[in-house]
Each structure stands twice: as C-alpha cells, then as structure tokens.
Image (cartoon, rainbow, N blue to C red):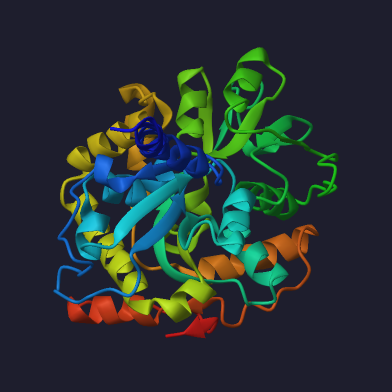
Length: 376
C-alpha cells in the first residue's frame, strides 16, 4: 500500500476510535447526570413502535427527575424497564437533578422533554413563561414530608416558636408549607430573610442532617428520606404534613411536559404516561419489591443505597398515584401568595390531563380532575 494511502487509512481509523469519546464529551455538557435507560431495564421492541405496534413520532424522549424516593415512579419505571417497554424503539434517556429550578431550566432549554417535579417549581415555571413553557400532565406521588425536631428542645408545636427550623430552599414546596403553618399559628416571619418568631433556615437537604447533629438547627420541615435521616440521628417527628390535608393527601411530585414537545409528539407523551401509570400499579402491587428496585436505582445513580432504617419509614410515608391532586396544588399556590413569596398567579390551563384520562379510561378507571385549572 502506498505511504499516502496508509497515512489516510490511519487517520480514518483514529477518527473512528475517537468518536465514542467525542459523543461522551458532548453528553457530559448537558444538565445534571444523563443515563441511558438500556443500561437499567429492558430495551423494548425495535423499530420505533410502542407496545401496541404503533410507530412513534420521535426517536428519543428525554426525561428528568430527582434521585429521591419521592420520585419513586421514574426511579422504578426506568430501573425495571417499564417506561421503555411502552416506548418500544423510541429510546428513553434520563437526566437527574437536585433542584427544581435547574430542571425547569433544562425543560425550557429543550434538554429534557418530560420531568417529574414538585408543585412549587412547576407553578413558578408556568407563571414565568406566562403559561407557554409547560403543562402538568399527571400526578406521581403524595406525602413524604415531615417536621422533625430535637426532642430535647421541642416537645410540642408551640415550642417551635423562637427555634431555628430548616427548610430546603426559599420558596420551595416545603418552605411554603412551613411558612403557611407558622402563619396559621399566628406567628410572624419575614418570607425573604426567614427571620421572625421562628428562624427559617434555608438549607440544602444534603447539609441538613449535619446541621441538625451539630445543633445549628433545632429541627427541619423536609421531604423523605431527609426526614428519616434526621430521626435516625435522634430526631422526633413532631408533625406529618399529611395530617394537614383533606384525606391526608397532597401533591409532592407531578409529571410535567414541555408544551412544545406535547404539541409535536403527543404519541410519545402518551407512551411515557402509560409507562408511568403501569409503574405506579406495579409499585402498589408489590411495595417491598418496588422499594428494593428504587434503592437499586438510587445506588446506580448516586453510588449509594439507603440503609433499611432510613428507607423503610420513608417508603411507608409516600403514596404513588396518577391523580395530580390539583386542588392541593391550587391551595399550595394560595399559601405561597399569602406568605409573600408569589404574586397572585393565573394558573388556568396549567393542567392538560387529556392523555392521562384517555389512558385511565382504557383501563376502566375513572377520570381525574384538574380542579378547573385545565382540560379534563
């Protein structure tokens, strides 16, 4: 072979060898941590068709969620291949986030198409875009939020006055709930600074257990599994937030979709939602197996699983469901307005439950309501 030809062949082989590295580098430039579902669960059927044999309109759908058991639906649905199964040959790719605002940012930027997220960031994302960026298309989970306190310092709700209590972030779902509870007690707190009759200390959930152990906070209004971590450190559950809501239910996790993606690929959205509904049914049918699956997913995503002493009580306090519990979201928005963290929002149209109710009807189940905030 002439020298020039050999040189050209070597350059071509080098380019092919470098291609996976380039693809990996590009993948690392996105939001959060991206995982290919094929590594976790079954790959589904080939040819871009869903389980009903229909060709879907997108080759890939990108989802986002938190590596947290309040996001049990996507954790288990991806781990067990239940989401991918409904998508057939359409590839599922996931990205994990640690905060709602960054997930909304990714949705707005087109880095993800569908996300599991709490009510407050969903409301904020909808309001800031004047209703153009997203829709809530399903519920996912209720419950899993507790006020855990140092029993040496606090023995009753009235003892919370004058104490330092952590919440995850200013204006987040738990922060709003705690400020509303404080207001209901007749106490005053500045919503911006957190100073007043109670000191509201906005602290990342990863840091809160250490802050609690050191005594720099006297308690925390937090979601699971942080609440159970605090109990394992000697804390006591003073209040389970579910006790404050009708029937003990309030939304902790919704499913949202980019309005642009919903308009362009309603069939793909339907497939993901069908997978979500089937995953929730799978979790309810065998909670112990589902708990183990969620823990396996957490280990895959974070490198660490939850010990039984934390996982077991946390898992029991969360209920997966398809109903978005729209009335509770509406109430949470009103609480944020009353607390001074949100201007009166126009939430008309935030829900589009058309696809979800189509799926529920096909399964012989009753429709869920958007509480006059969207399509039924």
